[in-house]
Image 1 (cartoon, rainbow, N blue to C red):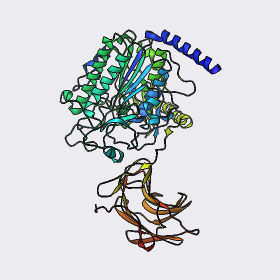
Image 2: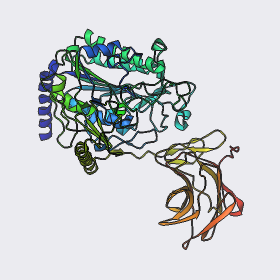
Image 3: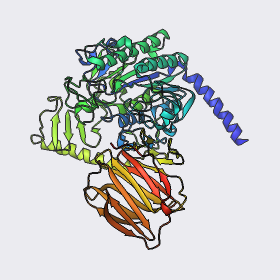
Length: 639
């Protein structure tokens, strides 16, 4: 009864709050582009890209010219925006890939979760890139709806993702292709299910826009939050036919001009619904542009539709760097009646400030159980007299710091005066040693804070699943697929991977395998398991004590290095002869050494393993007593 009464009290309180919140609660729309340079808007000086709708936002609101992303790459910059924290505080996530098993911790509070507690409806429409497993998707981080691709558009697909019953498979692809593929084309997801693969990227900007205007229209009479992280202009670049060739900046410029069209559609919808005067729109980018010069011979990732990239002029640097061009991004904010028109603000502000700013304007309370780094910039946006940046210091990850006009790099102890030298061309540390020393101390304290008080990301164990094409083989981790011709490919660059064979009918006497690494670093290996699935022998090729590649045998805590430096990126024929208590290893028909086992060996299964490198395996053959073949891959032609 107490629980029931409490429930009724809560429902009554919620109804009262909903009636009170009503139209006095502002709406929020965040438009977050991908790899757009500081100079790539008309209102930020672009000579070749026309952005009349975003320019109109600037004329009706404020341009922030010292505005920073949380990182110079995708995943951490998005974590910073949504949590109001430096990336190191919320898991220190690097760029996530389809084989990544981690994501933004659901214990973190996002803008969406904060606003949903205030009665807002919330939607994420676009590129997520904070974990593609269902436990990490937007619907687990405070969003009522999600529509978009789960990571960057140059990435492939995780075959373990769940497909919708009516999934649309394009370009002749099948479900089997989806499960086994290494095709570099992402899926399109609604909520938690894949609804299309490969995603038609020529239509992404248009479809994101349609989803956004639909959501706004459906929820015009209640407070809403839309987070619209565009896929473009990340590479590979795509635009609809309507915008192809319309700019003077190649396909990159076409993509930005289509995004500007999208902004116009959103502004028009808000106007038609008569809610634009109670809606804050924020337009900014996740980091700077790729380092491209526009030459015919200049290519990134095999060109991938992009010779002419974005511009961070007059800033130094680009995506991946901690120079201004990597993390200072264009930003425009508009809210008629609240943000004065035709403002330019050069005070330090950042994406980490968006959460506390929205909290102040919505009446939400920032979670008290965890630290955040952002601060409200309402005084700056409202044009209050003598308003200053709330940041004594802003940190470029743990590599550099800005305080006022000064920027300090820990590498080579560099100091720049950004007011006099926005392009960071002259190191003045020797001229201003006290300033350099003060900023150095700020950076050291920040590094210590992030180390001591950083919170962990979340991890998920992928469910084991059958390996398509090899009956009885089970993928325990990583991404594996059987290629045409019989080679088995391990596609995980960043994590450990393992695929396990069916149980053997007898104890093996000879195990043969050809394998090679596809990257210069990392490991591939072969493990032998006993009946309790405990590793009794593992053999791996990889780095050891600064030796480029070594072959080593391990049993328990005992490791025996049995060959010196070799080139692991070439095919190698590995052979194990098992007799009584001895295992003899050979490489390319050369006997390497012997591992003596006092308590014998009882092999029940074998596994192929990999770590930190893609690898290929072929011509596996396991022979038992009387030369009976216990296990065999289809033989592949030599490559």
